[in-house]
Image (cartoon, rainbow, N blue to C red; front, side):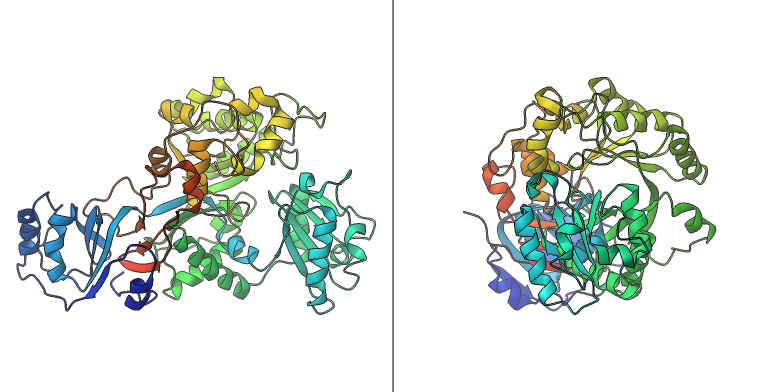
Length: 540
């Protein structure tokens, strides 16, 4: 991307509380040699001068930090120590001096829901609320919502509601007699609706109003979803949130309606994220039959797999486990029979697409690995891999299957892990150290909007292995902070030729106390050489 972003002004950078000591806009001084090669600046000024003498392109941006970089045409042109890169500032259109800030490759959220993240900001947040508090919060929204319009909420959990039974329409009808109400659970695997919402979906008043798993999707399809315009606005809003967290790439597990919003943002020239998109299994045949043409933005948007579900989630008691839950609720929910699951993996494989299987419990993880063994040579993924039986750990590396893990779930699931699965299984949950040691490819993500998208929460969970209020998760599966952060990198290291997708932190995550990590925010995010976020006070 050649044009320079105006999103963040020099004035904003000067006033940012991160250590951006100096921002200089210089007229581009073009080095005149016609032979242009990318070169990594060495440890001395001579290497930097040699680079400049061989470059025919003006530098768009120089960032002085640890390490320092020079950027041209959206890519890193040189990287090295401050002393080696500083001389290139004379040939740059813009120079940012970040002092002692640490610079890293832009971060990738390996499991995100882009459009739902933007939509979630508009919904009543019920996280952590009892039933009485949730009713009060919803009633407040109803008072400002015209009759007949939807009231939408998110974030409830059975544990937080502190009710002796699942919630029902009766808990909502008296506070919203004239509005349909729809509330997603914290893990998005359950839905709570009122009688008006049932009617909007064409269902009778006596129909179930607490829905799980497949019934959630069926209800949403019947009751209507947000239109394309609303989804486009949500994608734009979510992008800003990702930038503020230092994220420049996401793996989006959305619906085709979400993909349309992402492509519309790209068409408008305002997509400033690299998006890998997996198409849901029930939508993939129709998507491929339409012979989609996505060549206009191959550097921004790629359809890279199929997403399917093998089980549910811990909070809804629907994660499929090899051994029963300790509360007597069974062994979770098997979302697809073996033949049906195999048929879906086979269909995608026949089109050259890997499958990304949602598998939280160890029963579902084993099923995923068994299925993938039948269709090798494709970069399949297990999404979540929250509980893995020890016999299955080495299979990830052996079968070349990625483990896409969301350690941030540890921050909210730890009490349920210990209560519903017991300490023995809790100790082998989130098996990061074992997976990495086995040679498996591991990436981290947030599952936003299920959890906040902040990568530093995931790094904290991976290295501290406890909740934010100090409740420990048993087991020896933690990683050092620097290793955990690398599992978020969008590319392995900052070297010449890679996209100039970068993030700077005012303090090195590897050296701060663990308790600081959840409060550590980027002071700069750059996408394709454009500054897309600046700010963030260093935590004390």
